[in-house]
Structures are given as structure tokens and as C-alpha cells.
Length: 121
Image (cartoon, rainbow, N blue to C red; front, top):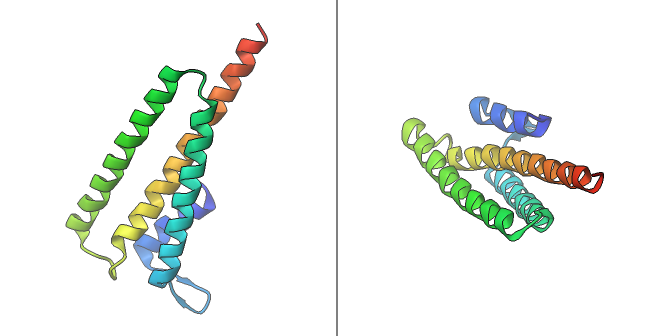
């Protein structure tokens, strides 16, 4: 877990402050959109690195399943805990998106290492 993900989790639980005041909805939405952009860029980069059509299709299916799971997790958290100052869903989406970015980066690293191993044979 990196510092940014840790911060998001702590902010969600404790509603800590940044600078001169609490996290504002506009700041959270901006962070959420930045994370979504990073997620999409990372996903497209990993998709291009996949070694064949079958692995690309598996990644596409995994990403669609992850999106459905993410949305269900957000809905569950809101149902269980209610809205945290109207931001529970945004905090949860930030946390889950940042975690998925790390998973995709790990997949990219593994694909790159496997390609190196194949080329060294």
C-alpha cells in the first residue's frame, strides 16, 4: 500500500484535514477523476503489452468483472455505513481504483519479465 492509498483510507475513516480545512467534495472528485485517468491509461498500456489475443481477452474480462465488483463494493459500503458527509462512495472509489492500478502495474511487470525470459531462451 503506498502513501497515497494509505492517505485515502485514513481520510475515509477519520475525515482528516488537508492544509487549512477538511477535504472538500471538489478535491475528492478531482482526485477520483485523476485516479480514473491513471487507471484507464495503465489498463490500455497493459492491454497493449499482453502477448496474444487470448491474454488480451482475459484481461478485458477481468477488468469488466473488476468494475462490476467495485461498483457492488461501493454500494455495499454505502448501505452498511451510510454516506460519510456525502462522500463515502467517492472515498471508496478512490481506494479501490488505486488498488486496481497497483494490480495492473504488477500484471504489466509480470508480462514484461515473462517476455524477457522467453527472449533469453
